[in-house]
Image (cartoon, rainbow, N blue to C red; front, side, top):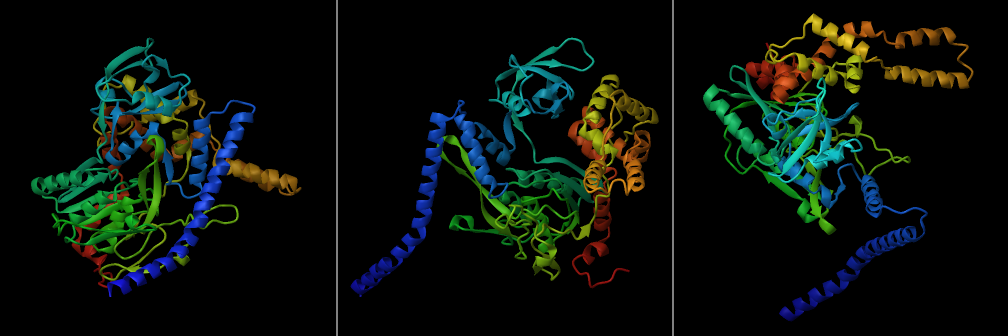
Amino acid sequence: MRKKLLCILIGLNLITAPVLLSQTAPATFNISKSLSIFNSVLRELDMYYVDSLKHEQLIKTALDNMLQTLDPYTVYIPEDESEDITFMTTGEYGGIGSIITQSKDGICISDPYEGMPAQKNGLKAGDILLEIDGTSTSKMSVSEASAKLKGTPNTEITLKVKRPGEKKPMVKKFMREKIIIHPISYSEVVAPGIGYILLNDFTENAAMELRNILREMNTRQGVNSLILDLRNNGGGLIDEAVKIMGYFVPKGTEIVSTRGKSMQSSYTYKTTVEPIFPDMKISVLVNSNSASASEILAGAVQDLDRGVVIGERTFGKGLVQNIRPVSYGGHVKITSAKYYIPSGRCIQAIDYAQRDSDGRITRVPDSLTSVFKTRLGRVVKDGGGIVPDTLTLDRRTINVAYYIFAQNHYFDFATRYAASHATIENPKQFKLTDQDYADFIQFLKDQQFSYTPQTKKYFDDLYDFAALEGLDKEATAEFEALKAKLLPDLSVELQKHRTDVEELLSAEIIKRYYYQKGVIAYSLKTDTDLSTAIGILNDSTVYNHFFNPEVSLK
């Protein structure tokens, strides 16, 4: 019997082996052929190209362009950028703890993090970095300066700084530290029994931080409803999203599954602990920049009918990346699978494998999406992000407020304002005076601020085409009338859009005194998504109606 079985197995191997070889041989040959061609071309360039080659840069460009043909998330990370991987997964790096930016005067401190080395050692937003450890920054890019600011914790850094309004540069010497960017940047009890938590990303320990904050709110302040803000959260570790969902649903609940080409890429994620807050009401805030793990969490809340999702349609990233080591200390981040949330849907909005003849990609049209059902039978769809249960649209337009921001004038005025105002009121009370606004308008005039609306640029293109076709003279009156409407009157626009301008200017000023937490506290005062969530959570009838829409509201 054993002999017979052995013969059968050998026979099977003899039958299947040529099939496997026939499938893998062409791919292996093509890879070897392509690498041989690449090496030959590079060797010929090295020997005969008229100028000297920067080999590493040339090969990095080739790798980047190759990977760009796949999707935006599959990227090569060279050895000298390997610490970025640690930051992506843990939110930690060694440095001074500040965002820097390029201004008209040079590289400057944009946003020093509260309680971190830059802020503790007196650096302020608006400070111009003249030198880093004795090296001039005059020819540095922002990324180059950032790399020099980073380093091993407990190593000394020396900065030569020019502060606006002061004649002499100053020298700051202090130690770099391990910088930890916490995934939760703000939390508050926003109404009786309702807690608000802003989750920025899904790095390591994000779930633990949320659990600790929410547990304290629950025990000390009687919070029994949660508003979880995932707006502008680009995602992170799937495990953290699953752990967070596990605080609210029964143990063993499936949250997400991944499916890829390899066995290692296919996995089902279930909650592993008993829920801590099984009866807590939940509202999740999302927008078009909520992606990946944010969409897994928001989608699971929706598919399991465990809470109400509020805001804009999410980004639509249903792809999973793994980081794999490659030669010489580098890594490649590879899209290895698609993920599917509890209803069975994948919310990926773009099929990167399908491109038109020009190589362009498009979103999946709503007409081609499929219907799925939530746990209680509500209809949801795939192929285009998470559509909230309550859609709230951002009605702000691209107006003069945007163009002021693009030219960095809010930042520059806030630097001047902070130099002449030692303190301001707390963020929830702060309000610009009429004189403050008048001073800002005068500042814009002194800076000779002007802008050309995008519609005016399109108008110019239209007029040029009309002239080519000989239609400009036939429609002279119409063109002139439209042109007059498109040319902005700055004084009129600044008064017409004063609310938008004041909001952005106030946020920049508040940041100088109360840092990011202050800006968040200020923005929540007029946050329509937040007020919508509070209203829903405060009314159990309205809240429950979302999961049983056939029951009419009275």
